[in-house]
Length: 189
Image 1 (tube, rainbow, N blue to C red):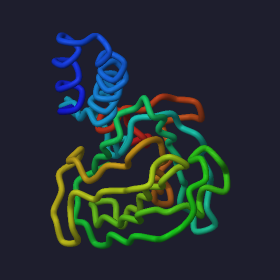
Image 2: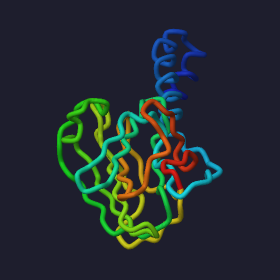
Image 3: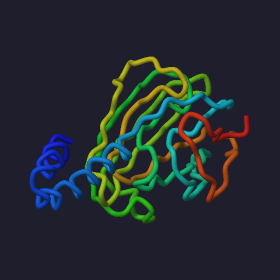
Image 4: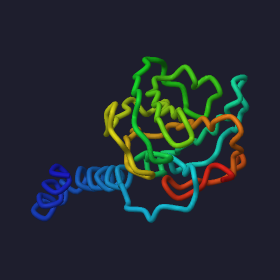
């Protein structure tokens, strides 16, 4: 922002500075857009979407849980929210690769695995870094008590968030549905 402001001011004296001012101003605008964090009115539902994006897949797991994978493009808000009220029982960083988050093998990417103790039992959520995303920034720690839709962390530049619904809970979304963090109900409750 400082470089964009300085080159813009200098371009008033000498137009050649405009060559630097235009891309720096565009980059500043893009960064402000990407790192936006709008306030939201919470939606109605037992489990709300932890991420803005598009439902990429819904898979049944052998243990009875259902994984709902939400792909976040660089145009989505990348602040993630608690899907329901509870206590953070585990935050584990797992090193890995940086494949595009929409790739089926992105399960091996760098990620942060969250566990929340909730009224529905243990809820697992995984933030997955993508090809451009190289950093996942948790905002809360183990032992923190969270309200539903509270901000829990940020994934920088395009990524994926998976939430595992407990056995017996059916998803209310289908593949291709758009989700809004803290607003879109994920389960049929």
